[in-house]
Length: 214
Image 1 (cartoon, rainbow, N blue to C red):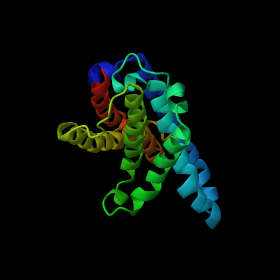
Image 2 (image 1 turned 45 degrees about the horizontal axis):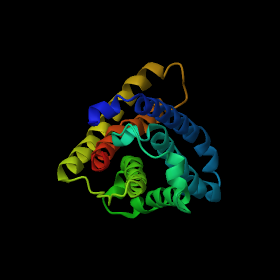
Image 3 (image 1 turned 135 degrees about the horizontal axis):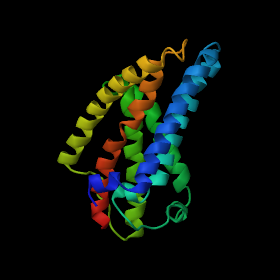
Image 4 (image 1 turned 60 degrees about the horizontal axis):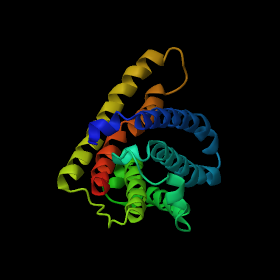
């Protein structure tokens, strides 16, 4: 199953729809309650460092959970819950490492200035962890580096997806601004769209990984 076939799978399409809805709700919730949380330094810190990063991790894991195993270009694979229960702490490690990534990236010189990359990188990390356990269940030693070609395509799409998100947010924001006065709709839709448009970058990586176990 290639990238186009994987993207057309019902499970992946459903995961994309759910992912988009969750991100839109998250963006609206963030805009609605963030102002109130900014009034207190403690809640401001908790929102930026704990609550919002964990919510984005939840969105990524829901996407992968719904799209599995089609996200790897597979039609058959061990049950996801069986995979996570095969060893202790797999679920907690999946959450903890993807959450930790969101804390570390802002400190990196280049990536820290590109917040739109945090979620796709979390998705790539979570996918790599999940695939390593899938390969282990199949008795295969996983190679998590997809190759320079795939890595280059992923990087290009991260840039293209960000620009598409800006354009779409402006278009939708202009048409809805009158009916939703008082809100910065461009920013709301951008925060939602930029996450949704990174899904192909994740799929490029995961489908390439899946070729090892077909």
